Image (cartoon, rainbow, N blue to C red; front, side):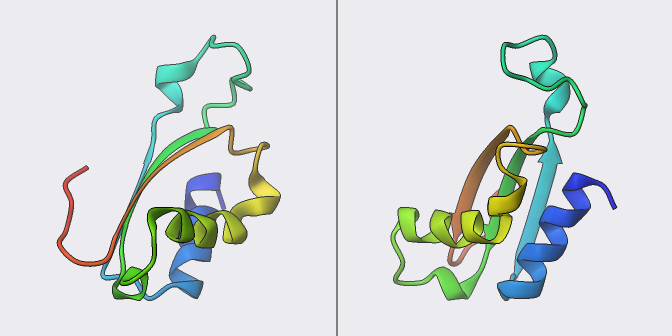
Length: 91
C-alpha cells in the first residue's frame, strides 16, 4: 500500500466522509530543500464530513494529524488540507 492509499484508508476508517480526495503533488517539489525525493511525500487533501460541523479549522486538522502522526515528517513531508462540513469542494 502506498502512502496515498494509507492516508485514505486511515481517514475513511475513522471519519465518516461524504467525499475524500487525495492528490499526490510530490512532483512539484522535487529538488526542494527538505524534500525526500521519493515521489510519495507531498499531498493535497480534501475531506467533506458532516462530523466536522461545529469544529474549528484547527480542530478538524488536529483530527487528521492524529490519524497520520506516525507518517509525519516521514514519509509525509507536506500535507495541504481543505476540510469542510458540507458542500463539495473542487480540487
